Length: 146
Image 1 (cartoon, rainbow, N blue to C red):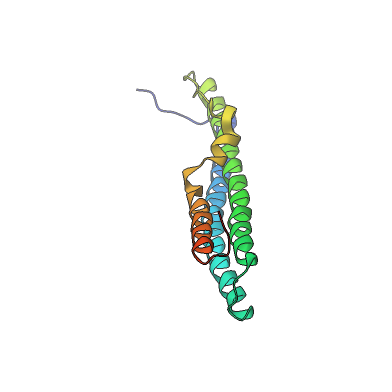
Image 2 (cartoon, rainbow, N blue to C red; image 1 turned 90 degrees about the horizontal axis):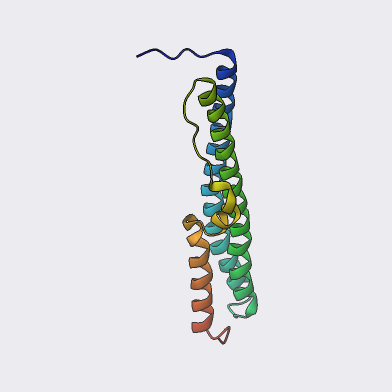
C-alpha cells in the first residue's frame, strides 16, 4: 500500500478544511449558549415582570413568554443553517483533494433542503417546549382563553 504524500494544493485544501471545521465548532458552541441565554432570559424576565407588576398577571406575560423563545429560535435556526453551509464547503474542499488523488468524491446532496432542515432541527425543541409551557401556564392562570 502506497503512502499518501500531501502536495501543496492538498495542504492548502486541508488548511481550508481545518479553518472551516473550527468555524463550525464555534457556531455549534454558540448554539448551545443561545439556548442557555434563552432559558435564563425567559425565567428572569417573567420573574421580574411578576415582581414589578405587584403580582398582577396580564397578557404581557403571555406575549413575553412567546417572543423570547421565538426570537432565540430564529437566531438558533440561523446558526444551524450556517453550520450546514460550512460543512458543505468542507466536503467541497475534501472532494478537491480526492479528485487530485484519484479517489471517489463524496456525494453532497444535503444542500437542497438546508433551510427546512434548519427549521426542523430537533435541537430546537426546547423553544417549542418553552412556548407550550408558557401557553399552559397562562391558560391555567386565566391570562388567555384558548
